[in-house]
Amino acid sequence: MERLMRLFAISDLHVGYQANREAISAISSRPSDWLALVGDVGELPEQLDFVFGILGRRFKQLVWVPGNHELWTEPWKPGSESSEERYARHLDVARRYGVITPEDHYPEVEFGGDRYSLCPLFTLYDYSFRPANVALDQAINWALEADVFCSDEARLKVQPYGSVVEWCRIRCTSTERRLRQLGGKRSILIGHFPLRYDLVTLPRIPRFSIWCGTQLTADWHQRFNAELVVFGHLHVPSVQFRDGVRFEEVSLGYPGQRSKSADINQYVRQVLP
Figure 1 (cartoon, helix red, strand yellow):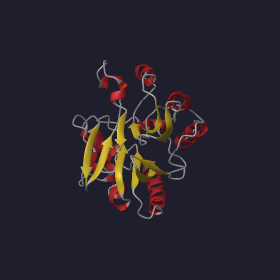
Figure 2: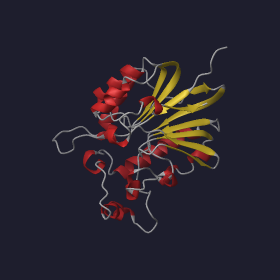
Figure 3: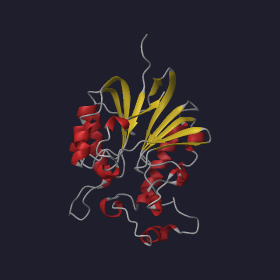
């Protein structure tokens, strides 16, 4: 009897760290299954090339969405590329390996005998994951009051957009338009950033939440008939439910955030069936 195809997922590989880069080689081969790489694979196209080259031979199909680290550039350098241009270079790498990205058609795929529309998302954040009494123009100061800061503020070059807020809203508008075209089909939503504020659990740095997503996506799991939502970014693996929908945070994280003896395959999570 033929085994049903499975979907695995992992995020935040951060292969700029040597220990993480070495760990990639230990990921087990599952040639009949799909793997979603849910953002922050690396910062440079050659890092994505390294990961896609190894894992593309070990899985039937790779899916990739960008995290914030894939958008990092060097804005302080004259003539440096924009974050959107960096994203375009990552897309070129993905296309060479046949990796499915947020810019591709949403495929209909069968996992565990059930059929879904698989939807890779690129939505960004707009500082709206903050208390109601904190104004948008005070959000970063609110975080700084607790000595919390995100390197994105120095590493993103958002031109031609006026701000990351504008870029986020444009991405969400175009993505929502595509999701509506699914016509109510059961979906799997895969994006680096949590879709809901109440999924952001960061006990040590709670005010980092402003760099974690947007309220614009809070009801997408209901509106677009999601069976499953997969995300990363938080470096806090979890399984949570909202309105009967399963949300899985699947991050590996930085080397210091896990045991040195941990097997990376423990972090390659089977999310379907």
